Image 1 (tube, rainbow, N blue to C red):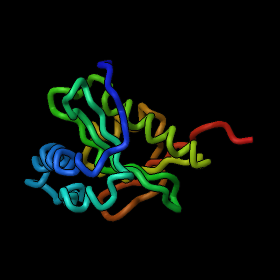
Image 2 (cartoon, rainbow, N blue to C red):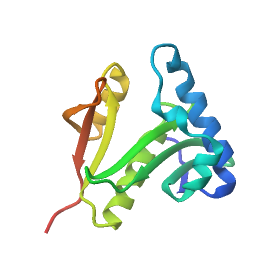
Image 3 (cartoon, one colour):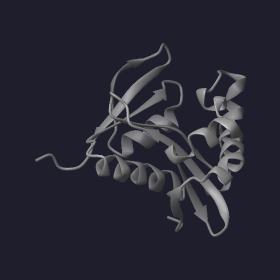
Length: 150
């Protein structure tokens, strides 16, 4: 696992965040339209407080969007730079979102995962997320209970 510094995105990060998301999700556009491609520098800037960034030194190596949601605290648009994959960056970002959810007294995480992306399914399953129900025609909602309930 490479050491990364995770922090809340700033308005000044918006362009770099959008560029990383597009670099990661654009290759999938040949077979489907990834929802993550809706993020532009303007839309990221408008809600920068709901993004986390991961940095290795001065380099942006990962991002994730997260929001409170009736289904639980939701994460989406998880993106890790190609050269940093399989180094724990994605896991560290998911854990950071879970910590923020717990700080808001939320004990359920949710993420919609495309059925055809078996690597993504394996990633979230390894982190304790379980499929609960179909979500749109081509996704399943994966959830994870987090933190101890009293």
